Image (tube, rainbow over all chains, first blue to last red; front, top):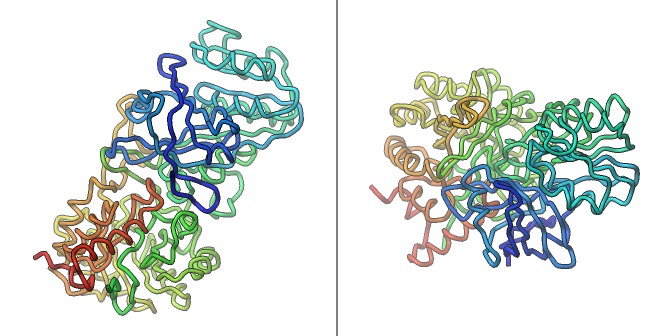
Length: 260
Length: 300
């Protein structure tokens, strides 16, 4: 069931297929929705509604994996408040209202790639890694506890950075890239803003094409409320100011287009 | 069944409109709802020149509502008239343009620019709590309300709606001031100035520190103010504040609103406007109401 937008976005009642905790506060949930699974691309996101009417706004959550044949999609999310806490209690068979797919998603270039994920920015890199057909170095940055890293292994060479040095290289993803001398023709990344800022600088210095997935608090998710803007280098042709909408014009931007 | 209502000579096919700032210029919502079904589309506030808006985070969720401090980001009236008005003209709905400014001259420049455009009404935002100058500075002083209304009326070719702030001691004073200045219609309420503190980051939840509270949480305040204003002035009132379904809309109409606006609900239910239209028709059928005008202000 569901109500359709005319450009392929759907508000649907999806069924929870499965849910598991990956760490103390990061959960993985598979949802059944033929319609969304049919058109969603890596780097896009869905708006997930809570069942509690006192929490009005949907939670924007990135797509971690797509199973088109099975009509399923996977989200991996961190419990940060009451809304995501509610999601973490969902079990197989539960119904959840979802709007999507939203946003532009990653481009996919057929050239040697660095895929970089940091913290809760790691999940959207998994489907991108699966779909890219090229030589891939995958760099994953964590504070301490690892998750999803094993699932990346079939799709490229995985390099790990941890802030506390408990696994892989001590430090951040840039430390790994520099230490191992990793290079590529294109970078795709999602993670905290300081990480994206550092990658943007690195990519500019090395002359590498770089695509960054940004995050900001959102209300509508469809480009109307103007809550989730990012600063742009040039005047944007829609807003006519130095702003783009992360939900609609992004969340993925060419690094040199945005000011971080 | 008659659902048509009259706002200062402008006949709306039904009383359901959009609240400024929650519907863009309709383009983002046209894929979810048929804009032809709406009484009017009220566009996001437009100024004489582009405004960049506030820093992020611009919104925060609160119990039963949300705070916003977008800061009236808009592309300026030139882009608006060349892009947004032609888009809306494709639909059979009334076009109401919300106007913002920092000075009286700013407002007048926009109103003048719109004089020859196919715009049905202008709505003057003297109640935005999120910009330092202008906006609410005009809306909290009855003398200023009357003066700017009078100025706008001198330049406006279309009927003028004055959008009032709830952040005042007595809404009837402001309503009467706008009426005295020559306002054709009043709309209320804009958002309530509010604050949320993030206890984990130990700072304000939004960059502007304060923001405007909207959503179901404000509805009882809004219904009370619409009731008070409707009983204080003779001009029609557009009621808004937390309307999410037809029951909410009818409550405002019974309190004295001639038309109603769906606002924050658009953000969490892009189908909300048409659901309200259909729900009002169902209510009228159920209660055997022949003409929606019978309901306006019938609770005394």
